Image 1 (spheres, rainbow, N blue to C red):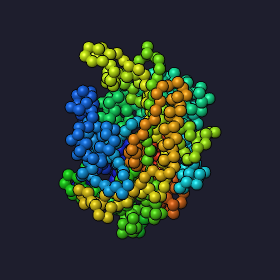
Image 2 (image 1 turned 90 degrees about the vertical axis):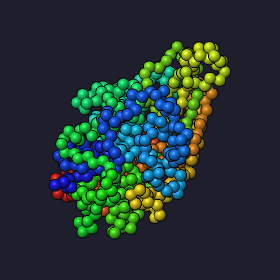
Image 3 (image 1 turned 180 degrees about the vertical axis):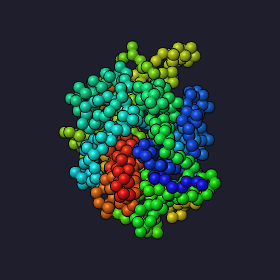
Image 4 (image 1 turned 120 degrees about the horizontal axis):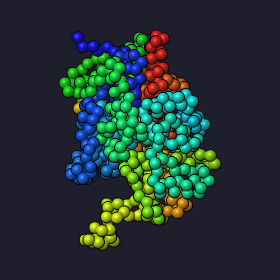
Length: 563
């Protein structure tokens, strides 16, 4: 007889779901992990891992046919919808959503989720990030502080493998790092210039990234090979993903059952016990409906899908679903606004070049509204980028023709600097998702309606980001500095957050300080949905830490008989 009862069910197999499965199984629980997409096995299913750009028919760029077939994904051609990642992102035609405001939703319906596709930049939030809402009167206060999560940052950093330097910056706390990748000679020079120019208040540091720079045979992982092919799965396990790290650890315990092609329809709520008893799924292949029972549920379906599952559950009790008693479920959608930055030419250094294909770049941490810096907007931003030397694929205008052109392009060109900015988006109740009343998907389930946009604070910040990057480039001797900006709309940063925020009061939040749903304390939400504010740094490391912290608490509560 098939066993449909487990100690815990984890919904979703991405970064946070993988961590939930690892932690709960290692603590002795029998766990079922549900993934709506197909299975992707480590190494075996990494079909593009050894391809070079010239191995693709369109050299990595999406074809006109692909762009036409996926108009929503194709906005802002090239990143991250391209020939290399084709097929990895969810198809908008079979998984539609409604855009009341423009929203670009990048979903990866596969085992591992976006952990196979993420940018891998890994930073801690700083203490101020957890206090700013309360100090500035924005939304609600976080129910935790930096000291509550700091030990868990260390815990997940040590296992995941985060490379970086200890830079000693209060705006960007140091962690438990592996040796960092090295800046090239030009970046080192620019870092020294910037620090001197701004009297130690602005910095260029090496980007901290989820790549191991030392072999980890105990995990079956080899160190990063500097191939920079990190969108297709790494056969060495050089970068952190569910497949390379947390899933093998969970499977090793013998306590994990992985079930792909399982679309979670709803959480089953017992209104007398005020607990969730399990989940109901639709088998994506047979379309059979199946119920699985468990003592606890970790909801890690990604920010918007986790909100969807809650909103589609217990609707006989709450019109807007499980966790909606505060009126905040689905609200306070955040992202990081980007699609702007700066470029410049770097004079000199023509005797210098680069080595390998480093999988990370430099980072300029937040400086706006920090220390003595005061602006006409709240919060701040950072820049990611690199200094590179132009190669054979540079603009050929003015370089001659025939043999002259060939000879010229065989030599490296000038050095250039390019950056892209990522800014914080404030939580705002008006930014929301909800269940559509008219549109359903291929399974007959209501789809999400997106109604979120950047507002005055973010618009002011974007202006400052462009002005600041040009000013900085000019001030350290770069030439032809100019800002660039493309159209941004919510979701495009692929850092969607909010929808089921943590808080101190069930009247104003969906989750408590332990990531429990106030209305059903045996349900834990530890993906981006739980975020009370967004900071301006990449959030995935925070999801890992919150998940490990919540899993530890959940198991202790089970032992006490409280769940």
